[in-house]
Length: 548
Image (tube, rainbow, N blue to C red):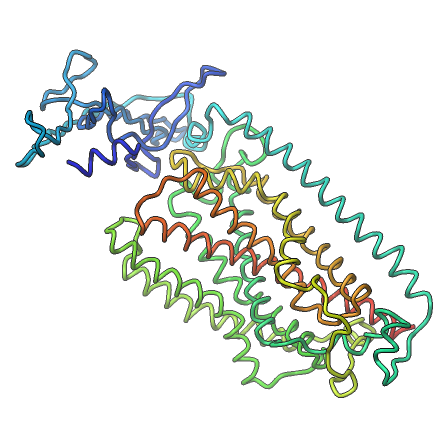
């Protein structure tokens, strides 16, 4: 009873599900006087510093008669009451509530068991205004729906302005400086690399900038994992956009792919994560050749291809599953219903081992067979390692420091995703009675985010080549792209301090662990975009020099 008293005072709610619909508390909008639902119902209430337990529920099940004569459930309303005995109160208000008494008349802790009477009543109501295809509408609408859409539109306009600003900077780099530099004629590298630095700026680095960075296999693996994350995340968001017409504007929801929202995000994520193994290995092998500075049309042996395919496709699932299993141990220890059963864990491991890895090897095989055209910039910019020399920096600058590049290049991407991040955090961690459904805005925001990261990597690459004459651009661009992940995790800490009131150490651990995984995933995906964009940019400009 002490635990129940604590949960009631903390505002815990009960979640029931009927035919995929959450049991809901009914509210009336103060703006339009229309009804809307909030998932779940309170465990009890507090009055005069005494907790009262809801032990009687009135269940109203709303159904709709379809055109074919069948019946479908379109509403599941729960009206809880606190009743002192087993008598069903019905519509009467003349009954006493069931108090939780922790102390006796002398103020000492009450001993003995407390018997709680549980009763319920069920009413079936036909609803002709709501059909099966739009039964989720009442869960989406609330007093803040209109203002939320306005905030999203304003945020989208603000994001477009930021993208235009960064695009303008890139246009200046590409047109005013780069184009004029390419017109000055080719540069013949000499053995005096330092003199070439001072005389010809970035063009003197044409043989050095394409050389292999530190730990090329690690960088290629991270980029392949980033591609895998992008395919999975964008695939899930696109499915949800197509599944709901509520993405950009109010209206009737649809259910094209699935009829309820329970476990659909998890299922779609697993499906796209499995399917993305082929894409990540295909792109990973091609990128690995470029980063390692092998000839772009080099063909690896079948053993090397299999190993690379297994690494590029299996690295992300291995890390995610390992981290999730560790977190799941703490969830098991709390005896939570959210803990994955052992059978599900075994099934996931088998899926990744029997589906993901073979798909990755197949993707690596076809990526190994991919050939660039002989006139491609990737072929023109190729310089063998024995002719290119080792990478070095003529200056030691703070610009390349991880903390500085993360702070400088992560601010604008975070400004783009901040509003959607706030709504998602509120839905997942704070207001568990609401659902995030604006997937159209989320998809547009994701596209703008990727554009800004790509353009930022171009700016960072050109600055480090021209201003600092430093050819070590690969890991810098990964830092630039992944900076959004550090900002998200920083916001995670701020959100925890500002809004959440978690006192249980396991809950705190789970919160920060899950958000660390999400932040790392977003950061690695952004880093992959940065490296791929910068690789194409480098090969384009130095390929143009070779052609000249």
